[in-house]
Image: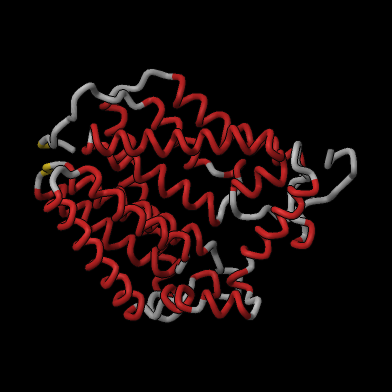
Length: 322
């Protein structure tokens, strides 16, 4: 419909189709369809941790002078400016996967030191990005972890640790002169004064209004008042572009993904890091992403569906070579 009406977006329809195939259909269908052993999931987890380390080392080498001197890496205002979201969500992912894995597995001291080092370095990226969506993703991680533990005492203990980590986030944010807490605390003010940092709310409102005008098959790829840009929320995007016909199956898929994530956390806690990858990717898609570019969301969703749920709960194992 958009092509026939000759509408011009921030991206061409051909590019949308290519990215839809590469970043959504391919990773989801391939991972969901093939038979994957538990050893493969261990390889995926190792790749995430090592990839996070590689990314953070490269980023810190290139942006070392900005640490502690800039509130948000995207505010450099020159050609050196990069996506704040890539920094923040990458940091949150490494922190979430690393902490979840260590809590639910017995590992050698050298491996624990390695993962803690990656977590520590990733916190720098997290605060350089200063993304509120990434903060939500990290906080939800701390709420998910207690699901893997039996007994009220263990769960309360983990929630207490989570509370201490939140205090740590506030302290580190101030130490690195990050804009993260200022952006969080200034959200209400930004909404009241129509600040740019709260632009997603009117964007979501407009997207929903366009959906109401065309509720069955949707309206178009972007939000009119915002230069036909995507609404930064996959549910509003689905309502906007495909109407009820596209929203219902997407909503059903995401609900089933969350259910499977909870099952994995409870039945195979040492693989609960996989649930964290999906949950964080889902939260990113709700605040900052677009359906046809949400590679991590569809990849992790496919891995979730491919994961073999055990008949009995798998207890914590000792990993000597992981």
